[in-house]
Length: 123
Image (tube, rainbow, N blue to C red; front, side, top):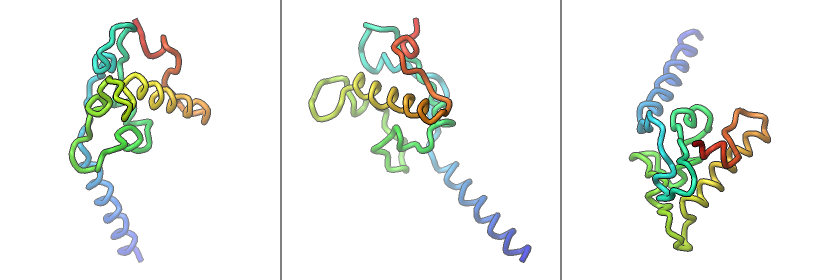
């Protein structure tokens, strides 16, 4: 019986380790989202990938087109800032996706990011 429990624990450990090491490492430094948007109307938004990795349950929450193999695309690769009509531009995407997620976390009484303009666009 002890051997079976030990074997199950070992297999579970190896499976979790394989997934953890197979995922590409995200950026460790804060990113300036406003630079991606090519806008200077408001102060830049600083985005901490490290904080989001800890709080967001799944990488596909943000990287919705990611196949889980190669490094995920940056938001700005698809959401170019142009009003193409096919995909939301960066501003609309960030307000809908990021702010929406922060609001959902607040409603669920979880630690959440800011939802006000000045909360994200800090001087």
